[in-house]
Length: 70
Image (cartoon, rainbow, N blue to C red; front, side, top):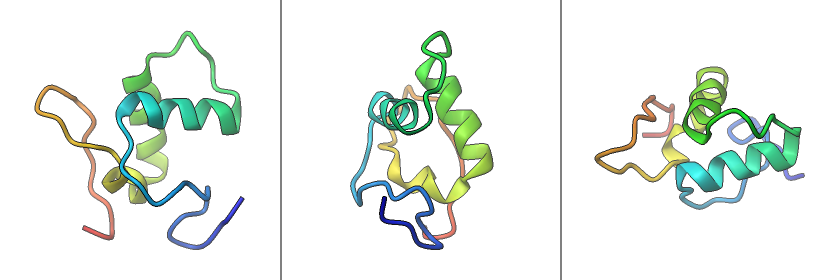
């Protein structure tokens, strides 16, 4: 895992859909499959707001947040 202060989880430098982001979280941490992708992303972004700029913003998606890079 490639960690640094702005990317402690070592996620790839790309834009993720909510589903892709949740998939990465589940793969890295073994999150429960019964939790919805949006809810999992919201929980994760509450703790790591710097990742909110990695989520593709679509009109109908509820994921919100502000990151330090945007």
